[in-house]
Length: 235
Image (tube, rainbow, N blue to C red; front, side):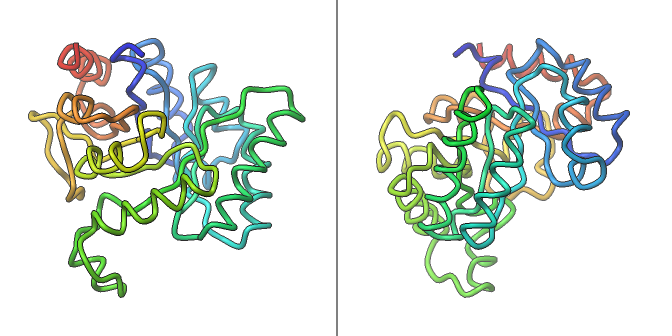
């Protein structure tokens, strides 16, 4: 992959016009667009694909429910022709297996490429103290590794993890397991509400496959210039 292809821009807004404008401006400048709950909930699946156009789409809805319900959600999401979809690893092995199987079967039925199915380990907004608050004892890295190994065993293609766990997971899960990393902040951007962060270049050098970058690009005065600046740094 080229450095540009590794970047998925997170467009987090309920405003369809703003989302469409950003996606159009960034077309060809990055590898794809990540759309999450804000736009999807406000506008629905047809609007999501319409806003993104033909760009590779990461449908970031983090499904977490009983296996049958998640399988159904995955099947429905494939009508948006996503490049990547995700579930929460904490939903367990049976749920993740159902998600992986639903993606395989539905892509065959629709005659489209099978999307990369990811599992979310620990949100990048959470640190050890936050995990303790919800009853998870021990360092965040241990929970991330445990969930990543469970995801791999369940037939999931990779995980969403923080940059701090890239080297750990690359060693534990092997070279072909996809690592998609949010919480990416160039040195010239503020951390915001992310607690486990890293620069784009450091994340790629550590072994990340894809970087999810939002506000440093979408919140910039000139989003295209910001995207190009990050690509230049990766080069």
